[in-house]
Length: 547
Image 1 (cartoon, rainbow, N blue to C red):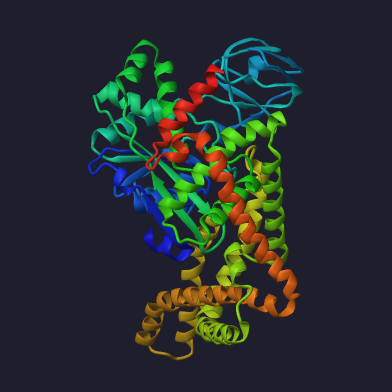
Image 2 (tube, rainbow, N blue to C red; image 1 turned 90 degrees about the vertical axis):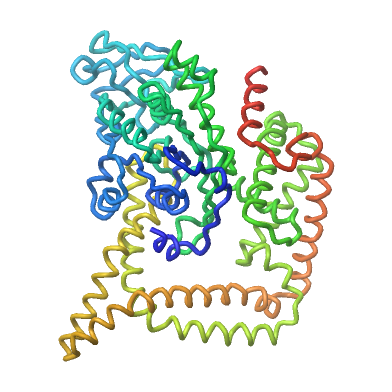
């Protein structure tokens, strides 16, 4: 598993590893934004042997299913994997009574099943089947509203009895093993969490009720930067463990659903405390840009970057957005927001990164020659192993991945572009394809009269030279990126480059001045050094509930 991470990710930073309990059992639960890669990253850094709950269809698939069996995962049949199209149309009017036109509810729906609007993710539990044209739905938890979309096609999700799975999981925890679960229910490529499924809370409360084990729940934040691409970056953050409090335990004894919902809210806030969340990718990108401008090119550790990203995200979500929605944004904030967007667009047009702008005034000739020489050298190193050992499978994996992404997007109700499935498909394709390619070369070599020892030596050397090709090609691409500002310095009008540098310097000053002006209004988020983000989120949520 560690080999897979080192090959497919440029860097993987771990934050908060000290929060992981030394001894099991432990439940690891996190966001699910990179399909099977999420589980691999948790397995590699959790310091425990973790058995994940995995969808039955993934358990039955080649490669992924084989790895899941070796890792001791537990298969789960998900209702959404067997969803059926309902006959006729249902009228979703925001009430617990669901009327139908041309429907046959008595034949297609049973008590305990769920229905959902076609194209939506929210699943609505059926309390009673009144007739062929009427169902009674269960209320959602506090703060959530039943969909009111009028007449719509709908899906029926049959009730799945998970009693056997829960029994297996309880025994699994009783034996001291650690469990991994992604409570969003499925992978997605959104910038915010999907509503959490209650399974993780039911498991934790059930283990306490059945075996008297209070299992700590460790929230995990999987933060990816170009994580769907080959050689992207990842930050794995483990938050403080969540334990079942006396208040939650008492509520569970009184009302199991209430107790599980209370624990689920704590888990949700714990996961959010390990992430930097924003409504859209554009807003998240602007938050990262603002953080970089604020830091003035200082090198930060991964933990400090995450902390600063969350401070900016907290200010944006709880201070700037309310002002924006009310149309009360101060002129100063409107100006700096528009200038940061314009600066980002300028960088995108020129193909530059923010950190490269400060090099635009460098004397280029010596630097250009050194960079070109280094790039040519590493590319020569990468050429032979890259073209022979990596490129054929890489090109095939890209084609397979593109096709799989289109199929995944067509089947999903929640994915935006289905980029979350790309890297997982690329990995599984390469795991199967690379050995086949190498064995094919070995057979060809043997057929040309080479001895078996020489063929065995070739196969032994293949992994080493293949990985060397990856590293050398990556170093060459870094040099190519570093050449951009130097070449732009020669090709583009000097005054234009100087304007861009000056704009960056002015934005750095404006961002710091804005933080100094509005930061104190955030209280602990501005002044505090070590912030408990989960506790802060709970306090903020309770204040908004009162409003």
